[in-house]
Length: 230
Image (cartoon, rainbow, N blue to C red; front, top):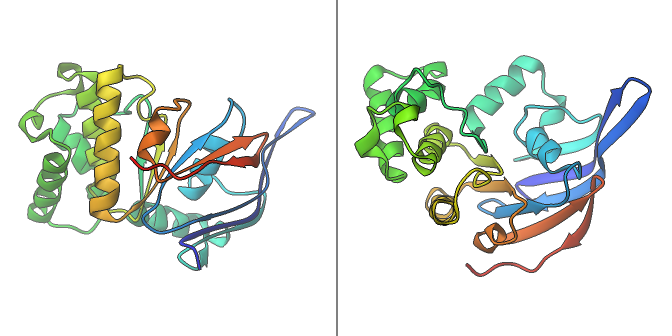
């Protein structure tokens, strides 16, 4: 059984009289430890799929089975607890809290877990070291470059040791050099942590770092590209 199984996965929204279907009966299997890139035009369902896998949104119909559990059937409290323990989310614009230091931003997800202050410190320090930003632990977001801010955001995503990391255009706001550094970092973390990483991107070069690239259009899988060998 695949780590993630989407079966006839559908998401429908209503906007007034208009019916919008960002995902339409999608079937997809993702293996544990895979680094999957999702491409497609705006409105193709990429971010919708990302949010469903992350437990942020719920499908209208179909099954979303992760590690043998259909998370679409979870209660609100159960899905919140599952998301807290299993998912790390990386945003395009970092979503750091401006009044908190890098250390404090990374520590935030751990405040929801029953950990001692010492255990939190060890986790945060390890995460900052893993992304190469430990020497900026006491800096505020405004004191960091875009690439450094994204490293802090990645540290925040991995500090809970999640099984799944979802990244929505993680290099969309970075220059070419910083984007390369971030993608190389994500590739390395995916291997070292043996976590499943799903990344939405519009950049064909970004897909070179993934193990597989899928193309979505109008909520359907329209093309499966060859595995990358980055």
